[in-house]
View 1 (cartoon, rainbow, N blue to C red):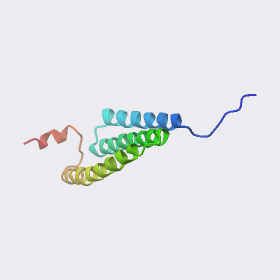
View 2: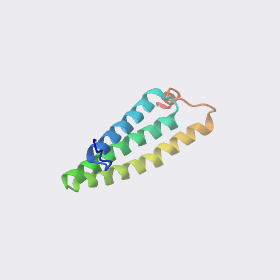
View 3: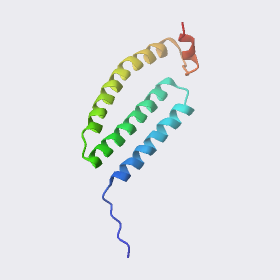
View 4: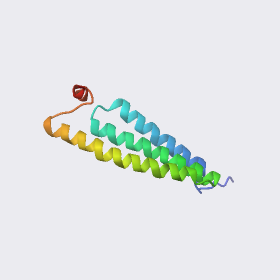
Amino acid sequence: MIAFSLVPTASWYLVLSAVLFGIGTFGVLIRRNPLVMFMCIELMLNAVNLSFVTLARKLNDINGQTIVFFVMVVAAAEVVVGLGIIVAIMRNRSSVTADDLAELKG
């Protein structure tokens, strides 16, 4: 009888991170709604954060967790500015696609 260990290891978290990053990439490439694309980019950032934390824990190094802190700060600033722009555009138009945002060029 083979006994399976259900204790999550670092490889489980790295596989989960890769799957989440793949879902985010697929969403950015396929969807045309800027709000959904924005959420997919955030999903990709969180997947990278998960891999940084996993590797930092595995290597007993705090540098990965420090990088995650700065990535989260930049992501929070991105959310403030990006969502503000997207919501302002969506208020003026009934349907918005990523192609419509090309009109914002000066």
